[in-house]
Length: 293
Image (cartoon, rainbow, N blue to C red):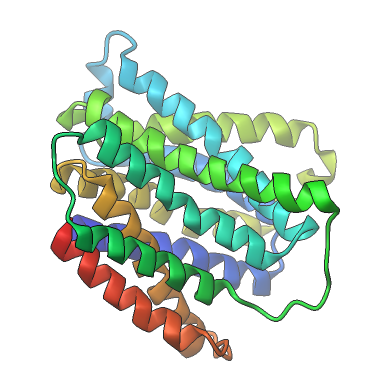
């Protein structure tokens, strides 16, 4: 439970950080690429990782899985931001958050087929999805995007978000040896950092951002927690016997609660009329999932 709590706190911080960056006026894409390289450096400096890396004499399956997982980070972010731009924030948020359904099904049907799942977990999952819907409702007067964009883009965000979680779950269950759990994020973030650097080469209009101190500072304060969020997610999965049916719903719903409270008390945001109901449902769902998983 301790590792899951840490995963929630560091994941929630990533969303809070972007609210701060909006006030700083930083370019999010450049910050994200720098953040990936900071993640790699943080992972290499993590206690024991350099020694462990020096003992890896040949490529192993978990390394390839890490690279594949990391390669999905940047495209998923692109899809999310493009959907916000072309469709709406509400639709993008819903598509991203409800994607937890697929990792749950993979965990139950593929990774833990012999372990019974209590009815309370499924009820908690449905209540959690309702909470996600309510928390995502916003006042949006402008209908954006054509018909194919309103269908294809949210579906792509849904599948992209689910794919990342599924790859992490499968990697932890089948490929990552216990002693290499802290190295997996290093390889994953190197993949995303390398991909991001290649994209930046083709975007000269972004190069001036590297001259700004706030860009590097933002990348730093995002990168260290980002590495830790993936590390503690892996350790939480291990602590829960790789039960993604518990870990992913709890992570998503708890992050909603933490960020909603941060929005109200830290950023002084006016909560939507459905947010109190969403928070109550999230707490109920968390209790059901944790006690029936």
